[in-house]
Structures are given as C-alpha cells and as structure tokens.
Length: 115
Length: 116
Image (tube, rainbow over all chains, first blue to last red):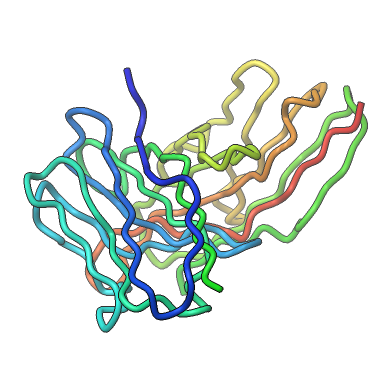
C-alpha cells in the first residue's frame, strides 16, 4: 500500500513569491491534515479536512495561506506571498475514522526555504 | 493547558545500551489518546504506538516498551539494546480538544543518537 505522497520534497523561493505544495493521502483515508514543522519543534496543525470539508482551519494564517481538497482526495496548500518566516517543513498526514483516535500517517514533507 | 513536555532535547548513547525517553503531559480531558512517533532523517513521522487513557497496561513490542502512568501523567518510552538504526527524533503526542476540535499536540521531540 502506498503511503502519503507529497511534492515537491524541497522548494527554494524568494520572499513575496507564491508557492504551492501537493499531497496525496493514503487511499481510503477521509481525513487529511496539513502541519507546519519548524526546526527543532514538533508539528503544529494548520488545517484538517474531513473529505472535502475543512473542519478545522483555526490555525491557518488566512491572509496568506490557503488550502483546497476539491474532490476529497488530494490536496494543495498555497502560500501567497511567502515571507522569510515561512521557511519550515510542511507535512501532510491522513487517517481513517475519527480524528484524534486513530493514528495519522505522515508524508515525507516539503522543506521550504524562503530567501 | 493541553501540552506535552519532552524535557530531554538530545540523548546520546552507545549501541546496545538501554535508553528511556521521557514524556509528561497535561490535559483536562478525561478521555484522551497518547502517541509516540519516530522521525528519521528522511523526515517522515512513523507511528509507533497509541494508548488510550483507560488502558494503563504497559506494552512491549520487540526492543520497544512503553510505560503509561496516569498518576504522574507520564508516558515514557524505553528502547532496550539500542541500535544505530534507532537514531532519530522521537515525538510524544496527545489528542486534545482545543477550540471545539480534536487536535494532536506534539512535544518538542527528543533527538536520539546511537553511536556504534
């Protein structure tokens, strides 16, 4: 069974440029998560989808970040415009069943560097 | 507050030594779940274990064992006879109800280095 797929693995951009990350969850997983992981820290949730609905986006900086999961499968996270402080690893995860109870399966992440 | 504390930022041991990674949590929920994840250099977090708040039985899986004690709000992880391949960052995490939504709250992680 394929795991969570993310692309690109690495991205280097200049500040004020837009950037997008893509995630394909494990087949059959209805819940998809985007996390931000700063260096030396644990992941922090940005947004959670149940199928195509964003059910928790309270920690997503909506002035510059947006996300979509149009058909309830793969998802895109966008930053526009990027700032220096956005340099981090962006992790995607998926799970089946009730959020919080079941283990989440993580992708390898996208390491973003903003110059 | 709902939080997880991993006081050990870095641990370095020699191969074959036993090592324990500490995890202390705070929660106001009566039902909650605790997790351990491993993050090797490749970056992908790998699920190791889930424990619910009603099950205080310790668990052993090969060289890995977990000690859950509600009385001290701790969920410690021990690796017996450590190997170089165990080198990674290990995260303890807690499900928490925050602003009406279930979230997974991670500790800051413990970087474990096993030296040959």
